[in-house]
Length: 73
Image (cartoon, helix red, strand yellow):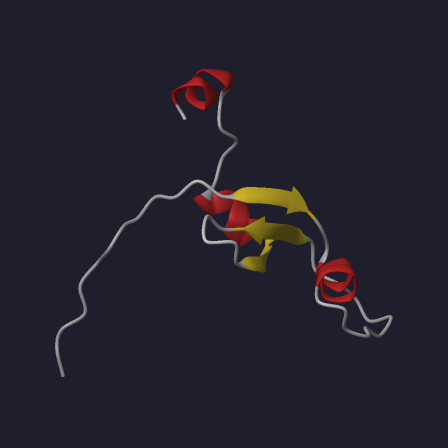
């Protein structure tokens, strides 16, 4: 088996604060129980894929794009 290597990547994504139950119900159309839900973000990737990320994971990987950065896009 090959030895694992470390990789780092960067991408610009769209995100909106949304708890897991709201994502499952409103975005995926699934029935959800009234169980405890986790805070997180609905994420839309450049290829159009929509997913959900836990708050801590999202906030450790992404930051808001500044106005100056937006002008470069």
